[in-house]
Image (cartoon, rainbow over all chains, first blue to last red; front, side, top):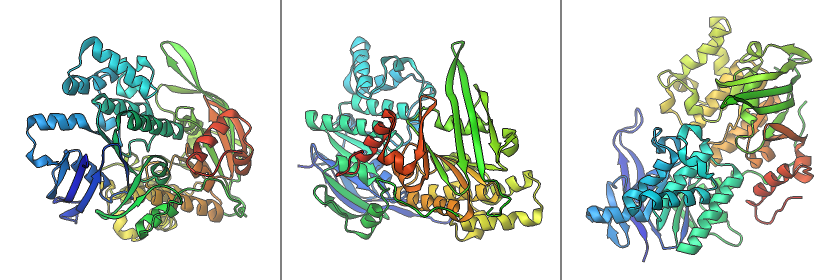
Length: 264
Length: 266
């Protein structure tokens, strides 16, 4: 059985950008994520990737269709169901600065899910916070710092630590590593792969970088104008076939420089 | 910009930048020298926090508060210049996040007219120059775009607009600080092609700050590698990729090539 699924999910924003009333952000999207599976969601800016992430995380409701967790529609959830769901499904956003309270220290930020979702406080919580900081390669003394005292990449790792604090079964990463240096991106992907191996954690890895998707994921979904247009398994001579998938694959930056005609 | 009188070479020499932490001076940029030539892209690469962006900003005396330039000079064609005098005139700058670089309550037209007005350009020629620059930056439908506010535009359009404003300034040198980091892959490729065209056809000299060796491979002619505030290696792009000499360069390259199955560092 799939862990998290969308069935014909649509989302229409009635107050679209100026001059465009009623923009369809998502158009009848269906997908399944199995336990321990890693699915990449690929597409250019504005194609609806983040809207789908918000629907799957239960932050917004679909205007049509439904999102199902462990076989049950989120629309039937009661208080206890939501609590269990929040533990099981965590989301990391692209912009870490807007995802944390600027007045809380790193320790307080990570303590929140520990307290509310796992009931951990005091010494038990502190031990967990230190372990989480180690896992994302931040020093233990980061605990006392405020968001503004960290770089963007450091703060993003705090957000990843906060998501991991809930011990989720599924992590939705919405361009969550895009702003990190490459070696940190790879380090985070290795951490995610370890959790996948040890605890059967699933991932929805939203990105526009096919190189990372290919390295980390089992399956690639391509999205265009609010619809899923392609699904391809990763492995062997991996090649996307839809026009949108081809366009994304063609835009991958070169591995090596090539000799160019000189100026003048 | 292609006339024989236009500047050919920008040299940053012995740049030093420091800040104060807990009453102690901390060096952030240490004796950095760079050489940007017309018609070429020099990539400045290194891990985040190594001092790349600060080098760009401090060389133009535009470092953030609390950070001071302690040493260094900037010269154009061998003549030393006051940084504040060449900023926006001989050196234009574009930044990583175009959305935060624009005033949210002003239209593109208002943004476009501000620079030329500040430089004292005659009113009649201002808009004409901006329109030409927008076309060069690949923005079609100029009339419509000039009336738009930042929130009505995509990140890619805003970055093109930022490049257009840089071109409209007529500055022969461009400092581009992570110009494509927040853009999607397709828009990134288009912007990199645009920058390549501007260096080749219009003779723009570009100092490109990036952490992505794919961007370096696509655009750079020469590469300076920075680590902990110092330049540790400078070489033509082919040499950096094929014969890196410093371990830091090799690590950057290994991480980059690990994303391309079937390849490994030289």
